[in-house]
Length: 141
Image (cartoon, rainbow, N blue to C red; front, side, top):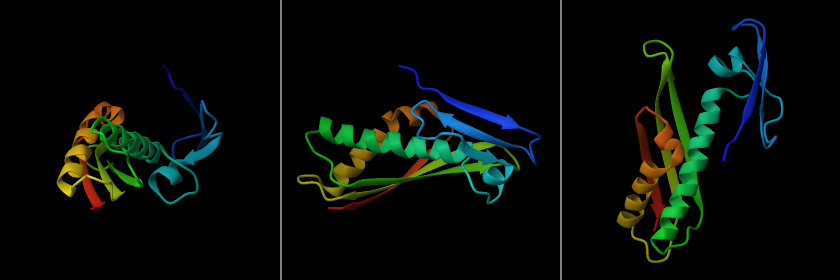
């Protein structure tokens, strides 16, 4: 299986602009620029898209890990925060996953946290990222 995305850019780094399009066209010429990446411009940026990919993958992995343990997920919501250090490392330095889950019959808070940790370790996007990935979990059990 392969997934594709296309980036187009025109101009220099500071004043140029570009568009991002995904294979599914969910992003279809979505604008990005220096301002959307490093300031407060309108549009998206690579780090935001990595955060979205990580949140989506991880949340699905939690559901799959729950199912493998014999449980069915109720509402799961994850916010991923990707940190970009442009001063020292000039790299993405971490991703923090903040998971909130509604109660699931038969699952204690301790068991849910164990399942979430397993999902974090086995999420395909987590495994693709080379920086530390942290997580917070809120479980209403």
